[in-house]
Image 1: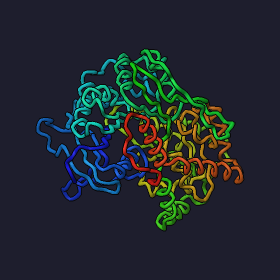
Image 2: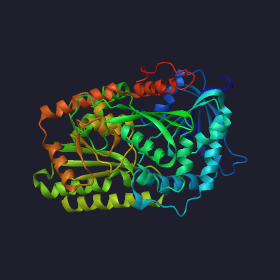
Image 3: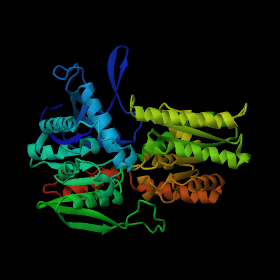
Image 4: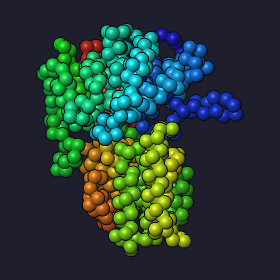
Length: 506
């Protein structure tokens, strides 16, 4: 692989692989799931001549890290370089666990009561963002496309614009973005939004989040010439809570036009369907069916996070069993809640709460031959998860706030049999794409109760009509289509970004 400057630089805090020790040797493995942020971003490297990825890695001594700062990778997604920033454990704690997770994350998800300003060390947040920008500038050609991802790197565009004035800089948010009444709680709001306005393109999953960003920008800066377009609702009369009839497409700040993009990340539908068709998956399905022994399976898959509404879902399941005694011994909830950040007290408290509720439900209702809740806190290998998707009567996804939610799309893609019911929170971004799901309000016990009853009692014809529509939407906007939307957004910037057509990626 050549050492020349890169045409495309992706800046994201995580490394684009999983590192494990096998027989005393460090091995870099492909991510377990084909979906999610990391595999999606890696799909771009197969479409440029030279690419680089910027991430951080913890080091005991950043001046003399015990790892190579730059490694060359060849995998199914192409050839690219990974530049790793050595951060101390204290830098990681301050930048990620405290500032990002205790101050920024709750505001983004509109959980004002969980916002914690006091322990924030903003100079360290700036320092880490500056280091990411420096690493990206070292890798990038002068006119490269530099694509920054997610809220913990908000300040990178400002620094990059100074270092690489001719680069095409894009930023994509994988979280919700609140309106000014919530966002402006942050004391660093001018610095954050001022940095984002240095981008050529700022992207979000859905029009609501893009509209909120424009509203925040207008509340803080002299922004003009906001252009909008009507949103194609594809004939649907359903308007989920996060719907918008218009989406902003650009604004002007300090004489510069900033493109605003609303496009949801898709999944690799072909891969999911191929997994569903394997003999291995068929065998797993048979084993699951035998273990269920005629019981109906309700499946919920999420991270352990207060934004995911796990407790609210378990309370709704408890009420279901209290309300409908005819379901005793005939339904099982498989609740998969995987910790995203180890060692953080707030997430440990959430996990303890989930375990407490699940334990109480099992203690109250379990019989010798029936455990009503099966709580899992470890990730399920993706191919095994596909088998559970296919055996589930209901997939129950009810976050209180979520930028998108790919589990909903994976469930629809896996159901090549055309059956199954998706119960989905209106406050997940994906509900805007999948209004054919059974939509619920997780803040309302009445709504939660009604929708799980509706899902369990739904006749087959209705199930299949809804699933057919959701599968069509999922297939119509895959990873490749998301990539194409981004390519077109960058093509409006002065100078064409040389991505080849990526619609065949998925």
